[in-house]
Image: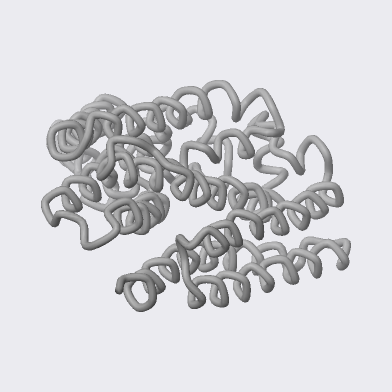
Length: 303
C-alpha cells in the first residue's frame, strides 16, 4: 500500500498542464512584442508585406520572446519563491522542473531564431538574439538586482519588436522603427512602477532594489508622471515626418493625454490608491497606440 501511495503521488506530481508551460512564456508580454512589430512590417514595406515573411517574423518573434520569458522564470525561480506575486509561477512552485524549463525555453528560442534567420533577414535574427540575451541575462541577473534603474534600462528588451519587424523587411533599421522603440521604452517605467508601488514590500523582502523600494513612493509617483510626458515627442515625430496620419495623431494624443492626466492625479493624491488603475490603463494604452497605427496605415496612408 505504501509503495502504491508513493507511485500515485509521483504520478500526480509529474502531471503538468499545458498552461504551466504556456505561463512560462508570459503571454501578455509576448503578445505585446508581436503586436508592436506589425506597424514596422507595414511601414518598412510601404505596402502589404510578403505573407510568408510576415508569418516567419511574427511566429519567430513569438517563439523567441516566449523563450526569453521562460529563461527569465528559470533564472528568477529562487527569488520568485519569496514574493507573493510570483511564488506560484510554474518553476518557482515546482510544477515544472528546471530541466523541463530549460528544454522548453531552448526549443522555443532556437526555433524562433531559425525562422527569423532563414525566413526573413539575418539582422532580424541578430536583434532577436540580442534582445533575448539582454532580457534573460543582463536584465534578470545584473540590472534587476543591482540598480533602481533596472526597469528603465531593462525596458529596452521589451521594445525590440519594432526594430525586428523593420529589419525583417528591409535588412536595416530606420528612424520610424526607433520612434516606436522609444515609445515602448519610455512607457515601461510608469507602467511597471505603478505595479511596483503595490508590491514594494514584496520586492524589499526579495532584495530587489525597485525604484519605490530605494526612493520611496512619493518620488516614484513623480517620476511616473514625468515619464508619461516623454511619450509625446516620438508620437508627434511619426506624424510630422509623414509616417502616420491624422487618425493615429488624434487617437494617440488623446490616449497619451489621459495617461498623463491619470499619472498627475496619482501624484497629486500623495497616495497609491489609484496606482493600479493607472497600471491597468497603461496596459490598454500601449496596445492601443500600436493598433491605432495599424488602423491609420490601413485607412489613411496607402493611396
